[in-house]
Length: 67
Image 1 (tube, rainbow, N blue to C red):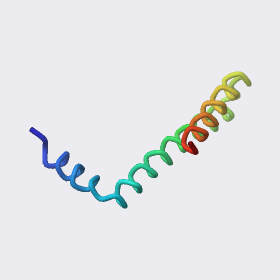
Image 2: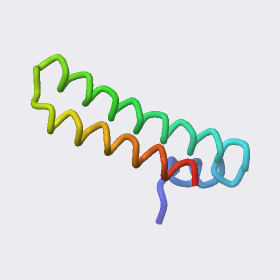
Image 3: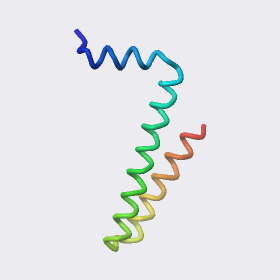
Image 4: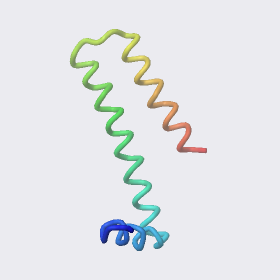
């Protein structure tokens, strides 16, 4: 049995415009989190390998979104 919140979300997700905005917002949040991780690595003087790994992860994520 679903809760009222789950039912509400399912009802909203049936609207294509809302669904597109939801997916876009979710991906935007993921990218912002990755950028913050890179920024934190820079601020903490992390190794170049760590920073390069995080940047590559961000690039792969963006490339996957464009497919």
